[in-house]
Image (cartoon, rainbow, N blue to C red; front, side):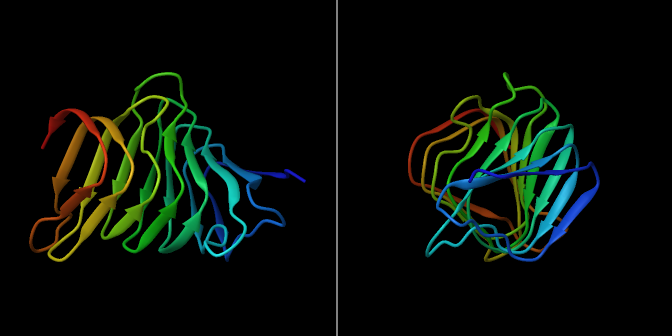
Length: 169
């Protein structure tokens, strides 16, 4: 079964989310929203996708997530909390670069490609000392901001495959 859960703008899911079979299930946000809990089981069944289907940022809490994240609207994006790790891709399927954005607030690892269909307008790595975002797949963005988010020290980025960007700030 490939069930779809639609969340209104401003909605929040609290708790762990799992699938009966690997790759089943979709969570669609109509705008900004939040998930507090693990998405999928990295040792078992992952969710098919979490989709930002409207303008706004969907916040993803800390934990290991086995899912594909897709920004399907030109004003959509995701913010990943410190410790949010993704086994899967993060893609921009909105049809163009538009105003799509990703923010990593601390240390995270992403195993799949980022921006495979279309590049993201901005990817921001905002952590402090001893914070590192590791991209194991290819990364495509117009701008990659490597800085800090009111924290001491600069963030670090590790890229394990191709990096395609116009600006690095």
